[in-house]
Image (cartoon, rainbow, N blue to C red; front, side):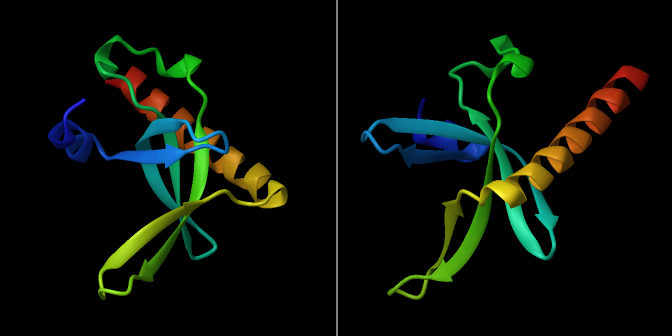
Length: 105
């Protein structure tokens, strides 16, 4: 995947505990209790061939901070388990509404 494609599709690169690189695509941004969150799924080379119902969805809190050069940066952080339960319900509702709208068109 080219850097241009990554930027166009809002792809975020993560490194797991084992040092493996994981590319996730932001599906949606949303706010809960005044804080910003993102719902992400695995980035595929060709998203048109993808069945989104089969992919795991990751929910991350977005912390915004200013780095040493004065640039605004975003940090994706996993919410705690209690908050995650509430966020999962929100994401299910949001994507459930999107599915209903698609069916009506």
